[in-house]
View 1: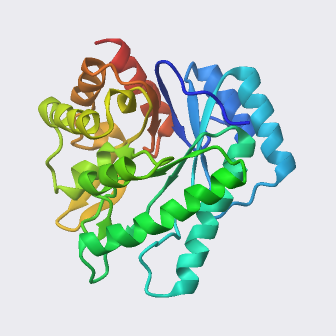
View 2: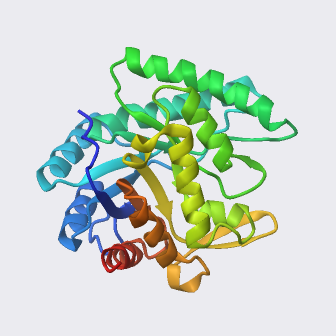
Length: 281
């Protein structure tokens, strides 16, 4: 039931747009179309609470209005936990988001993969990679046809640098990155914020995963407050130092296609700002 990959760059919101009157997924889809946006990320971040009937209603409305959906799995995921029950629960949450997201038509399932704790990046990579290979095989066996999208993370304490995320994607079938440009900016304590640096990120994706990866991107963009320990909280674009116009230039230079999801507090206003900026270049 999953939707097809878009053949252009679509802009949309993380969760229902701020101007959605009812705040439901279906009303959010309707508001996305009303605004002239093209996509929306379903937020299962506090748990997957949508039933099968609700998911099929979401699928039908999204298809009718030609709004492309993705889904964000719960925040409570750590594939490098020292406790096996927490690992099992994390896998269960990604699986549940994948199953329900797929019923809604979402092809991309975003999640934050792990924390380092006291482990090396290599050790965490091995553990996360092994678990994701098992999970992608299980999803395929169950005919749940989604792409798992580990997200670049905003704190140095979290597994999810650009290199780590691209490595997972290069090694595992059914895994591709979610590139959160605000997180890259925060994780580096203020770098990754010029057209040159944004182009370098896109070039790394192309070099590691091939040009086709740039035609199937899932991205997060927002303003962000940060410090030495990385991400603090999301901001509206105009209240932050993120050079979003430079990012839009880079995306246009590389002819990036896929979904760009705005996570600003004013997700609706900033998604429209990003779309207008991109179209004005």
